[in-house]
Image 1 (cartoon, rainbow, N blue to C red):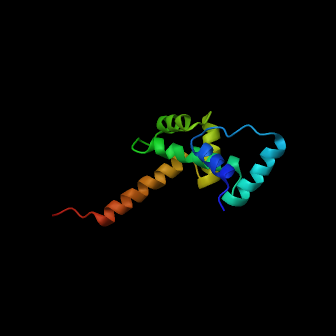
Image 2 (cartoon, rainbow, N blue to C red; image 1 turned 45 degrees about the vertical axis):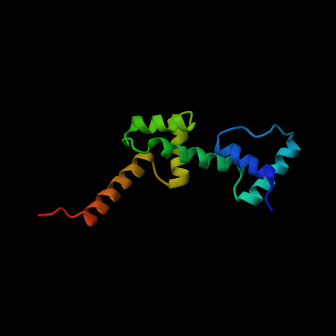
Image 3 (cartoon, rainbow, N blue to C red; image 1 turned 135 degrees about the horizontal axis):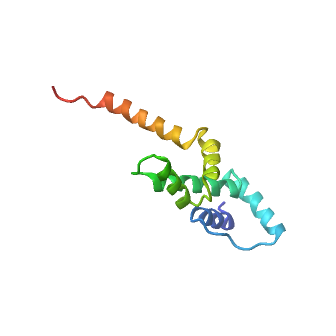
Length: 118
């Protein structure tokens, strides 16, 4: 059964909006229902959506430090250490290490799938 209050909280988290103002008992009850139905706490889901926005912003840009900082600020991070903690939390590495791995993967795929004509 779909819980409309939980659905509204998920939509608010995805759009980086605040949910309705609730007293502490109502807020805690909603947090429990949210975790039961979604599988993670509301704050964790907000972190996942914010982390995903880094990649939405960074796609098509170079993976240098300036663009990572710009992408992080656009996604809603206050500073680089906050973003770095989420990189380690969700991916287990730094942004630079992740970008380096992606470039190496792209090189390997290209070298195996693209054979120039002699």
